[in-house]
Image 1 (tube, helix red, strand yellow):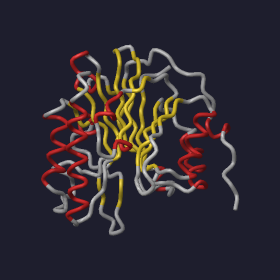
Image 2: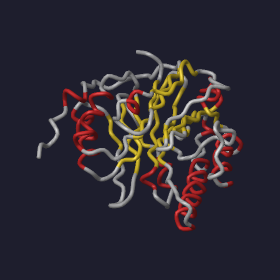
Image 3: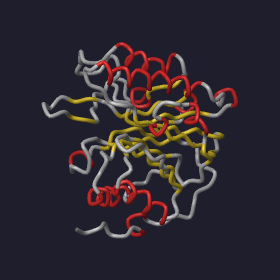
Image 4: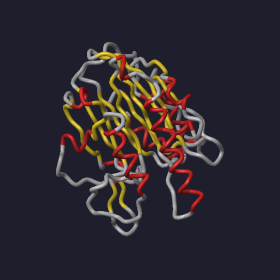
Length: 273
């Protein structure tokens, strides 16, 4: 068994057919835990959840409202549900939090999909409120005092303050949230920790402008244990999604793993119309 490995991947609310192709790709990956963002109550997302369950994986899939999005976490390692999302009263389905046992102790893995916004006051306030409430919930569990390490990963729909290229469209509260992950919660931008100067983008706009929206932040103790942290561009370049994935491996070994199968082989074919 290798060290604890995680990957976040925005699946873009796929159709059942595209979800089946995403499943084929995910089945080739080595990571222990997948955080799949931009989920919906849809045939495509249910296809992914059902396939992983049939293959013996743990699946946490909070059902978003009819017009809302969320996050799904699937794991080939045993997990304990962490009640952090219960502290989030606004759009709680955008957070999934679990505890995983490793040689370093318990690690809390928090999958997130932050809201997008436009220039309207309503959408701007919606995002500001969610980021504020998530930050409060993240700090309310008291797990840090118990020695539990935290990893937050997902699509934050925020770029780092000194992002290249720079953009003027992001607001002060978005940058404050990003800085607060370090200043308030003691977490480190894992990719920037390992690659201080490298320019990477996980989403490319129609004009060709790149944005690093997908992130992993972890505690300093875990940051010292990072073996690899890299963007995986294959799903974007092959049009499985409009996002690249982000993979990270920590050296501490998980203490146990489930008896899982290949989820693609376990899956039923997508419905044909």
